[in-house]
Length: 363
Image (cartoon, rainbow, N blue to C red; front, side, top):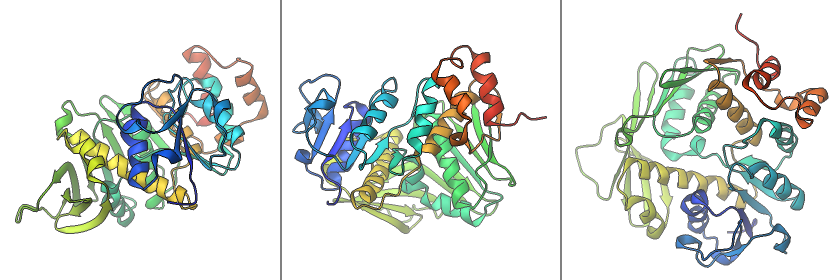
């Protein structure tokens, strides 16, 4: 596939071997069109066999039109900065959680201004939530979207933001931690998104409800059609050779071509979480396909920065109100304070100045 090859991947961990490389191979990208930048050169295993690897950015001689940054979070920002500087004309993807230290925030804001920097966030474009987003669009003021599922808060917040965008709502939101639930409400609406990690991953599910219609996904997958058991309000998947079809009841709403060898990486485990990972891989296929075709349609990098900030702050306080969508307009004096280390350590020092800038406290 064409316009944007070769591809440079920074990192060689689980995210790369389990999702990124399988997604690229499924799109027809050849192994010799992929290069991996990693900390140490070791004998590759699994899907990474046959892919050229280097341990220094200086060893990269080609110009890469597409880069994917999946290094560990302690090096994520530094590597992203170097990639943007080294390949200024490339389309760049950065994996979540985006940043680790508060003093990295100014660099993120500066990089977010680049038009070709995107988040490698996959929850908003998972094929199984498309009917649920359609339901949100039909009932923009009253939908409920509930994820009883394993996943970090930034993934959930990206899906919640996407639901609000699809529903035409304001993106100003209230994020609250209530015992086991993380809730997200957007101003001017009664709609709500909820995330809860299940006590048993085998009971994971996603639910959408608007008062009239219910849609549920229990991460079911079948290799054959079983007549008479499809429910009109339940999403399921069906494997047919090299095709994976998504159904809502008896209606097929999505068909994906994916090699059996890639599908087997997920389905051999036979768990709901493995099916969810397959959904994520297909989501990355969709995101990377648009980039490879020169018409990138992906979750925004700045939006992931905001989600990461909200995720961190909500774990420090019970409520974060009206998280500002104007992070990139921080005063120069504040950015300087971050750089000089004057807003660095201690929860009170860290949250006090940031709170006044990013949201209004509830009166």
